[in-house]
Image 1 (cartoon, rainbow, N blue to C red):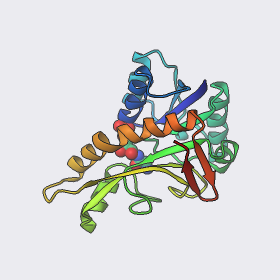
Image 2: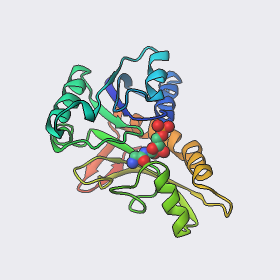
Image 3: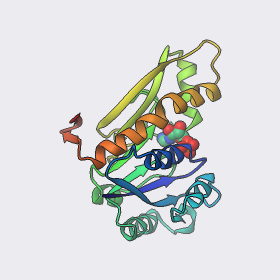
Length: 208
Ligand code: GAR
């Protein structure tokens, strides 16, 4: 059974999807053992506490520099004996020391079809605002491994939906979450825990 640490910053609906999937037996061979929040007031912390998952807060502003912050994140991960790190709406930047230590063991959910609307400055609602501004006809979400470049690691799962003429950033965000994110994130986590994701160069192969 693999230990899963989930990193959050906000509402935590993706964390909730992971918790629900674990409870329903949809995450095979994995258990959420720790939630780490970059914000003390993140509602995601309440979601963890409700189901008895230990949650800790590691805020960037509490540390003098990014190196000390990375060390604090690393020690929280080591303490939890994490085998897999899931970024579920985590809005802080992880440093190279964390990423190297957990190479191909950190996965992120991004609310667009990478390589569109991703990278520095593209997070949360801003992603959907940019998609609507461009006038794309489809959008979606992507689960990928994390490397040292923002939203650049090997893609694991991706799905799309149609954009409606009357969509607002809020309606589009909600549909992408409900129809895609809350399904593909738990699915990717389960695939990882079952050892079914093979990284081949900068791509992945899913062994179904
Ligand atoms: C989700 O849409 C997630 O894909 C996005 O933030 C939202 C968090 O919602 N993540 C990013 O933009 C990361 N670049 P949640 O806290 O309710 O899961």
